[in-house]
Structures are given as structure tokens and as C-alpha cells.
Length: 430
Image (cartoon, rainbow, N blue to C red; front, side):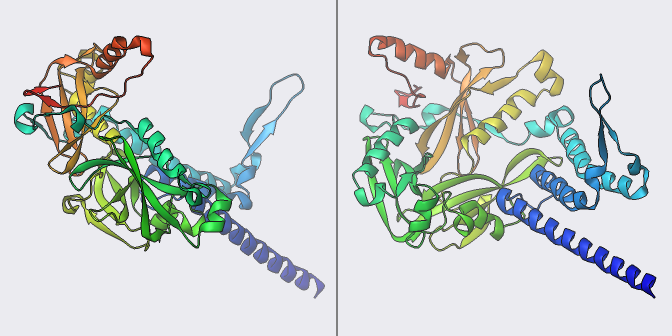
């Protein structure tokens, strides 16, 4: 009778131990998800990394930590070997389960690589050859050119904020400025952010009161106070964090670029690009959908790229625009040609500027041969809203060469050149 009681107690204790381990593992797994916010989508590498971590979190309490054993012998270096108990079937199953998502990432990366899919990468975009003089209006006055770069916008924006004592003591400007076309004129936007955890804690009920709009033509900045404050922000914590709100609203979406914009009435929105691989499992990520998120109300809508309203300016970021053209320019002749022959291979310079045209924001950057000379064979324009590409065959100096030449003209002043602005002077790209 006593033996039966002991066996019953042992079974009860074992079941309780299993339940406690499962509860603890679930809490840790949710904490990992809550902090890192991976998409629950098998087409995202982050998902497989998260899955690997979750499997380890659940299996370690049941003995996975004892899979490896460190042996140290006198006079020799330590070595790691499989523990003798891993010969059991249960431990082998544990190891295989953890290795499965790792194998998926490795195999998925290989089958999605440019080595096997050069043509698919090259065909991600279509590039139209165009005439610059026909497409772009002539610039008649230097005063109409948006010459301000982001670093200068930061300085001017901080000045505008510094004059508001009730705001500057609690908030700071987001270091990122979004280039938009607002009511027919180029503007740079930066939203206010909480200045740390305690400023968020003390102001979260009131929210973020506004944003700064910078005019890059006239070098002025204006603080815009909102009628309804922003609740969800990058500097928010817990449920007020912008990305956490988006992740819980859209758990399966792979987020790309997130841009702060305003509509034509000055109402704030976050434009969130949702990505999908165009090649294999993890290759050639491109924008497939767009989330338009209202940070004041917390509501949003998800739409296809072709349905994005005209007032939205930034769907594709400039770095993605460059990457896609580089795939097209270097891989059109095949993978090995991009490595060895380089016949017909061309690439963008490693930066880009902005150009306003037809109420849209366009990225522009020079195109040069992969041999690395200091001249351009042309340049491209890429529409930041639609993803359209245009190529202009214009031979000239590469942008950084032009910047160095400009600095040489005023070297005694110790000035530094920003990335050039592209304009039409008497029909010539200048």
C-alpha cells in the first residue's frame, strides 16, 4: 500500500513538474516574441530564427541542455562531445527538431541566392529608357532648387523646436526626416518623440503633440501642432510602441520601410511597406502591400501597391530602389558574367537624391560601370510611390567626383558638399 502511494505521489509530482516547465517555457517564448516582434510567416528568415529559439526554450527544461558535455583532461584543451545519454531516442528527436528550422534557413538561402536565380533577380524591375529634356521642366531660378540635405534639416528643425519651451523639455525630434511632396512643394518631415522612458510615462496620456515641417528650398522650419495627439510612436513603450501595435495588428506581415507622412490636410500617418520574396523562399524582397496607419486613432488599412493614394509619397525606400536596379544592372547577363566577365554590367553610385516631379517623389542616382571609374554612363529615376524606373543615357561625372570638384572651388572655406541636386538647365541634366 505504501509503495502504491509513493508511485502515485511520484507520478503526480512528475506531471506537475512537466506543467510548470511548459508554463515557464511559454512565458519565456512570449517574452521573446513581445521584445523582438518577428513575423509569423515562413517566408521571413526572422520567423525561422524565432522558431529555433522557441524550440530550444521548450526543450531545454526537458534535458536538451545536457546534449553536450565538456571534457577537460589534465594537460590538454577542453573538448565538447555529445553526452552518452544522447544515444536515447528522445534526445535524438530533440536535436533533429531544433535542426529542422536551421536546415530550412540554410537550404532556403541557397535556393534563393543569385547563383541559381540571376535572371529572376534581373527581371524584378522593368526599366524604361527616356529623354531627360522631355520629362523634366527647365529650372529657371536657383532659388527654386531644394538644396537642403537631411543633416541641415536636423539643425533647422531642432531650432524650431528649441523655441517651444513646453515641448522641448519633454520631447525630441526623430532623427529621421521623410522627404514628401506637400501641396505641390517639397518638404521634409520629422515627428516628435518621447525623450526617454520617464518622459513617456509622464506624457503618455497626453500623447505626442505635433511634428516639424522643414522647407528645403527656403531653409525654414515650422512646428505643426496637431488637433489630436499621436498615441503610437517609435519611442513609445509596451502597448504604445508603434512597431508592437503594428505587429499585433498584422502578425503575419513582413515589415519593410516605415515612413512618417502627412496627407494634404496635414494629418499624420505612418506608411508601412509589407514585403514578400520575389525569388525562392528568402530572395529579392519587394513591396507587395502597404499599410496606412493612423497613429492618433490606432486604426489602419492595408492595400495593394497599385491602389496607394496620390498623397502618399514613400512606399519604396531609396536603398531598396538602388538594390533592385543593381540586380537588374549586374545580373542581366547571368551570375558568372557579374563575377568574371562584367560584360554590360552597370550599377548605381552608393547614394541617392530626391527629385519632385508630377506630384511624386523620385529617387535619382548615377549609373556607372562596375569597373569603378569616376564617370557616369547615365542615371536613373525611381518613383518612390509606384516603383517605376526610368533610365537616362547621359555621360558625365560621377556624383562624388562632382562633390569633390565643388569642395575644391571653396577649399579655403572648409565646406563639405552634400549629395547633388539634379536639375534641367537648357535641356541638359545638370
